Amino acid sequence: MDAISKINLAEILPRLIEALFVGLLIGLERERKRKKGDLAFGGIRTTPLIAILGFLAAMIAEVTTIFVFIAIFVSFSILVAISYHRSADHGEPGATTELTFLIVFVLGALIYFNYMLISAVVAVIILIFLTFKPQFRNFAFNIQDEDVYATIKFAIITIIILPLLPDQTYDPFGVLNPRKIWYLVILIAGINFVGYILFKLVGAKKGILFLSILGGIASSTATTLSFTERSKSTPELSRNFAAGIVLASTIMFPRILVIIYLLNAELGETLLLPVAIIFVTGIVTALVMFNMKEEVKLDNINLSNPFRLLFAFKFGLIFTAILFISSLAQHYFGDSGIYISSFFSGFADVDAVALSLADLAEIKITLEVAFNGILIAFFSNTLVKAGIASIFGAREIRKYAIPGFLPIILSCGIALVI
Image (cartoon, rainbow, N blue to C red; front, side, top):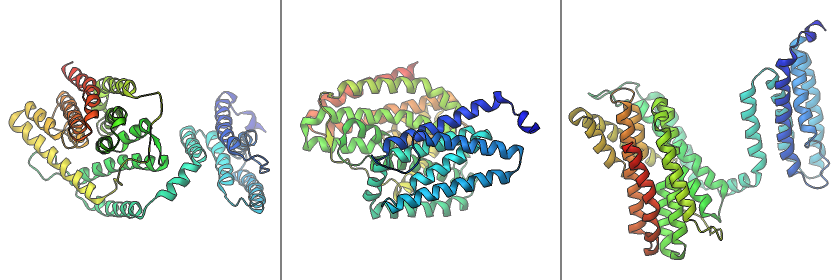
């Protein structure tokens, strides 16, 4: 009794409110997806109470014994098991709901022990799985053997290769570290794979605008090539395809900024303002270009699984070459050598340029040089995509692609000058 009286209400109340809020959010999604006449327990009222039950069980266990928490959890688990048995008897053998209730109970306990961030993250993950149930099922049905084999191969080779690679440099400039290079290959492939997974989750027949956003996450170059090719078969949609290419290319900038920030936080902060200017310019331009009278649908766009060994080795070689050439150019030609190599390297892969300069900024070059080099790579890469759409697409797409890319190109130039 004395221990309970010592509990600080001012400290406990915010945690209790978060537990209630987490349970309420999950309960709201559960209630929204409940079928009419569903008799299983657990809706918008019950789920918050489960979170509070876990919270109180943890609080009581702290002032008494852990066995109290175990007893309450076991009792609640029996209740959940009864619910599952009842649902299975009515032809609904899925256990997602019951597992969700057990997790909500544990989340309530974690929140009491002040694990607020991890509880919030887990709650968001649960909401994603509950909300996008049809999309996840569609994703599972659309997985091809090629995707499975490519992912398994990449995972196995990565697990085997990464620990074996030496963590030291082997060049006269002290920049070529095999383990770091392979780690960055995994980082880029992983980010591309997230975009690919999003494409699979979305499925077919989605609007160009939505596909363009996801395309910018997965591969803006692949999206540019796909939309350019499609413009030749459906030239009447050239304006929308050009807008999609501009939008996908715009999404590339914050995507690369995140990667740079993970590698070099100081450089990422320096690039934040110019990237924000370029990003806003591109978004406004793309939205103005889109024909908003009707949502144009597509069957699909051509994006292959990025988890391929060929991609990994290709990117690794490109990154290594750019890193070495940039160091060589800086050694013999100073900062101007970095800028020239960044411009031409941006034609091939802006990810590799950004990563190499972010890495060099920690050991060989100043933040200002890395900053300018990355903006130059942005500039040249944007020129290449505008050229791809204008040269290889339908004649009609040229009328929109060049004016669409012009504001982005100008904003890159302005950011560089400033």
